[in-house]
Amino acid sequence: MIINFKCKNFYSVGDEEAVVNFAVDGNAPKTHLYQDVRDAGIRTSLIEAVIGPNASGKTTLLKVPAFLQHLIVTSLNDPIGRPLSYEPHKNYSHKPTEVSVKFSMQDQLFEYEFILSKQRILSERFIEYSKTEERFTAKTLFSREWDSKTKKYTLKDTVFNMSEDQLRENASMVAVAKQLPGNIFAHKIAMYWWTDVVSYNLWMRGHRESAIMDGGIIFTEIDLLLENPSLRRGVTDILKRYDIGFDEFVREEIKTLGDPIFMYGLKHAYNKASFSVPLGDESTGTKRLIAILTHIIRAMSIKHDGVAVIDELDAFLHPDIVEALVDLFVDEDTNVNKAQLLFSTHNHRVLTFLDKQQITLSEKNDKGESEVWRLDDVQGVRAGDNYYTKYTAGAYSAKPRIG
Image 1 (cartoon, one colour):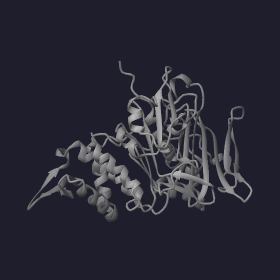
Image 2 (cartoon, rainbow, N blue to C red):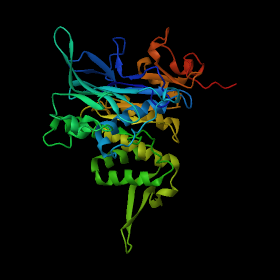
Image 3 (cartoon, rainbow, N blue to C red):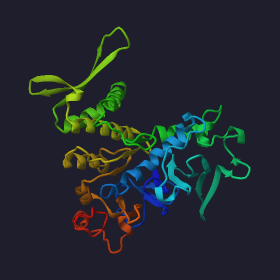
């Protein structure tokens, strides 16, 4: 479960740290939408929406967990010497970038912190938090610091038994350690959390999926559904509920002299008639819905700590469908495993059923840097306010400056 994640000097976020925080205070409603992290003294929301005008930094914020996923899990696949796969803010290209995430994993609380340049990881630290009867304690399980004089890392490692010569400048310690024999903890971090639990509609280097324009990505999603019966049933049931005439996915092999070629489509059923439509002829909204539902159902099917990160949840979808997607997480009957949803949207109607601690706002300042705050940080905002009406009236800022 995500507690918070932070970034500084990362894409549109400048030299002021930006935080997306799922942790809530004692004023949050006593409902199933706020869960306790056992023994940590922390309550977290299951939903966080990022709201703001175009180019305000919403996608930048959602890039953070996607970038961390690549850095932690798969960065060892990058060639030696390749620059790290992110961009600092243009105003601060000479300064380091900072990214971190605090999360729970099987009721244990951890924080993973990085300080980066484009050339290398400058600092890496993995912290375990424990709560005693008296206080919290923090223990660094592994860390490294780049020494610019010796051009080497200072390494501290209590779990992986690594040496300095095994470290990679552009790969995390976890990415390296999980390739070494016997490192169960590295596999636990990589597989349990970042691979199995968090599902994105962003590429792992932070670029948004283009499934609405590129049928190839949708083909991949359909392959995944056809190979995973439980995931397929979940997506199929929801697509039928939204009444687009959907009946089943179609994948037909076209025989050739070379490698097999597959044709993808959807079967539709209306009364007694049924027919298949090639995927390329389906509406953009239908293809977009399939892609999003795949991530949502995948996260919701995880028994513990599932997270769906969806950028532009409303793109090409009717507002009613967007609200229905969010309601999958709001409804205790459908979100039985208490999965989290992090999303950005321009469908501001969702503000009518979110709490002030579930709404993160962003906008650009006059230096072209994204500023980020949560609605409960705004003075005078009350729990009973109509957030939708007040936001559209400009009471909270984070709106386009038109006219």
